[in-house]
Image (tube, rainbow, N blue to C red; front, top):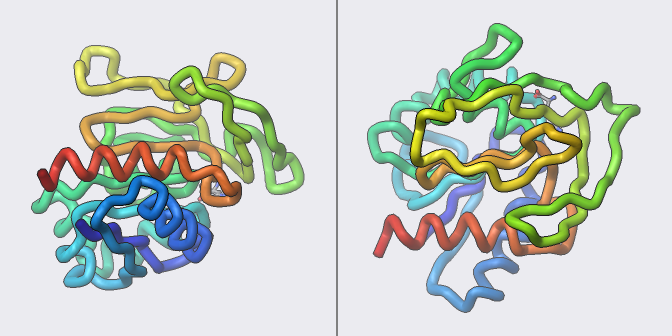
Length: 194
Ligand code: GLN
């Protein structure tokens, strides 16, 4: 199994390092690689989209035809922060989106860079340190879809959600040493390759 870390812009190396650790912890036969072009993405079983600037990452995704490859091959995507924005079907801003999840996302829902904060959050009932940097939040999601599951909330706002094998997360697990959320995504991808 191969996990591609989309290396276009943003906090890419942190995702690479934590994904490597998560693979080791799970003891699975998998590799991870930074990917930049559609052909590299096509060889992956799962893709991680980092935090960064979603307008920039989205523009390059479309210019390089990466959106088509992900959709044609149904490649599971784990998006953090800017990655969450790109997974949404609808947001409060006009920009290119992958639109893989039936969620509506509000960008910068917790304020600007200087309002960055860390908070204890519960992800599927377990405690985590959530790192929020110009973080988006999910303002609504399609409750008629059986394949959607809320994974975490903060003050009534949904901050992590899954639909099918795609996972969107407002905060940055890659900026901690905690591999559990990456392990959760790896297990999703494993289900698709088995
Ligand atoms: N607010 C940024 C955006 O919408 C995301 C910030 C981040 O990834 N840290 O692109």
